[in-house]
Each structure stands twice: as structure tokens, then as C-alpha cells.
Length: 420
View 1 (cartoon, rainbow, N blue to C red):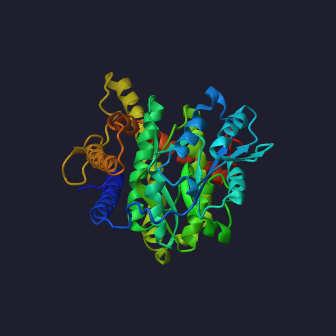
View 2: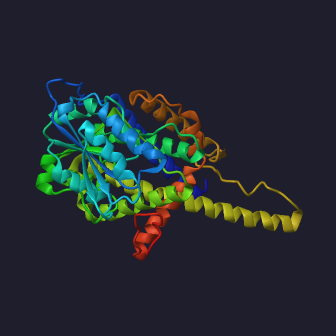
View 3: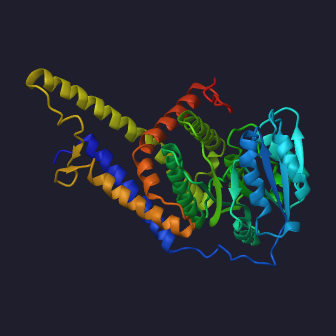
């Protein structure tokens, strides 16, 4: 039997998928019992820092929801310090957050915007808690979130912990895509945490020991992915990061396709830069993180880009083949979407069989994470929307990030990240 290049591609996809799924399944069913139950006797003080910039629209609906969620958190009030940093807002944000001073909220302000990271670091300077929690102004916590996160810090090796960050009540197709994207990330983080190799922390909400910040410095201001840099810095010092799957924080997600692409371009570009900076993490010295998780993450990037590019190439190739047939024998559509392969001496359509297998596996994982993360929102429609769009959107964002990195262009914050 003649083995074609396409056979090799499909075989590699199957092999990687089987290995990854097997590791995930074994990890799930051999769960380590590190996720502690709430302990009334263990209540370290938490300083929650909320950076705010121009959140005055709709009478500050989002920032009010964020602060109200903190005020209603099931955590001792004397052990919960809420710090809001106004990052030079040009609207009425400062007036709105000042209303919360009567509830004990501390407010600090920059006259001119310096960026989210500077705002968070200003809050850290004024924080008195043993734990530092950053919370985005467009995100809110469930009442029991801190109650569930804090117990993992009984382990002195744990320097950071993060909840499950999800999209709240997705309505548009784009929001549903983000809902599934975030839920998929929750599943991956859950497995990585069980393997002891979480490579990132969430920008929306993460809790970090202040003692680590005091010793190794605050969030980096020379990167757009300060959360990722902090996580890799923690891992580089051989400490532990935990993901607490049942602690939930919700965010709204971006509203436009341009903002969606810009945001992921920033994330992906930042990942490339930070992986170069912390490339020494790859290797057996750092356990599952360096031996399996980071190498697999890098491999999947190139695999996704390659498969997408190859699919487009084959599609274009088949279109030209169809055009030749039209010129010779008339209209026929049979070659345009023909991706048949024969790796097992039988003719199968990989456009039907392989996606079905992958979708069933992914669907099973998503149902599992919906249960363990105590998610009550429906997942079927977001799953379908994600399945039919992200295989295109994801690789495009990665290709843009790789292009920007290779060309030396800089990705910037703000309404137009596509700046050189």
C-alpha cells in the first residue's frame, strides 16, 4: 500500500490525539486529593485589587457588579480587603467607585492611565493581606470562590491559585464561542493542576502569596501577558500553582470579532515571547510541566497551524482540479471536498470519521468539566458554535502572532493591537 503525505498527517493527528486523551483520562481517574474543603480555622487575609479604566457606561453596571460580588463574598469581612485602583479614567468611573468607600473599599487613583499592570502593582503597594487577588473590573466572583480557593494555600509550596474563569450568560455567537473556549481552558487547567504543572494564571482572577511578590517582585510591566509571566516565574522557582475547578469567576468576554482577534493575538504573541524567556523550563528538571505540558503546548501550536494551512492548500488544490474538470467534461463537485485517506487499507473519509471521534471525545470531556466545575449554563450550543469556527479562528490568530514575532512588530494594548 502506497503511503501518502496525507496519510502521515492523519496518522500523526490520531497518535497525538490518542496520547493526549489517554493522559487526560488517566489523570482524571487517578485524581490527587489536594483540593481541600473550606476550613473555618484557616482564614488568611486577602487583599483584592480591582484595576478600573473607563467603566462608567450604563452607570457603571459592570464595576458595580464586580464590587457587589466582593462585598457579598462568603469570607470574613475583617479578612477581606478590597482595593480599587482608578487607572486615569476619563469618564465618571472614579465617582462611581468612590461611592463604595462607605463599605470599606479603599480607592487609589492615577491622574493619567499607566495600564492595568501598573494599577495592580499600585494596589499591591497598599495591600496588607497575606494573599493578593487580582480581579478584572468586568468580572465577578461567586460567593464561595475565595472560600474554596484559600485552603490550597495550606500547602506552603503553593504560591498561586486560580478559579475557573467562564463567560457569563453568552447571548451572541461570538460570546458562545468564547464560553466554550473558556470552558475548554478550564478542563485543560484542571488536568494540568492534577499533573502539578499549571503554566499560567488567569488575568481575570488569580490569588498569589504576597511573600512571593515581596521576594521576587510584582507583576511585570514590560509584557502584555503579566499573568503568564508571573506563572512561569513561579514555576521557575520550583513552586506550585493550583487550579481550583469548583471556584467560579465569570466575565463578559469581548463583543466584536476584531476585539476577539486582537485579544488572542496579544495572548498568543505574549506566549511566544515568554516561552523564549523561560525556555529553560522545558526539560525533565521541572517534572510534568517541562517534560509534557509545555512541550505539548508548543507542539500543538505548530500542529494546528500546519493542519489548517494544509487543509486550505488541499482545498485550493481541489478547486483547481474541479476547474480543470469543468473545462473538460462539465460541472462536477466531487473533488473539491475530497480528503479521503487509506492508512488502514480501507477507504475512509477523514472529514467524517476523524472529526466525529474527536468531537465525541471532546464532548465527553466538556460534560465532565461542566459537572466538576459546577457549571449550570447549557453547553451544547456553545460547543457547536466553537466546533465550526475555532478551527479557523485559532490558527489564524496563531499565524498572526508568529508573523508579528518573526517580523519584529510589536503588539500593543488598546483599540488597535495591530501596531508596529
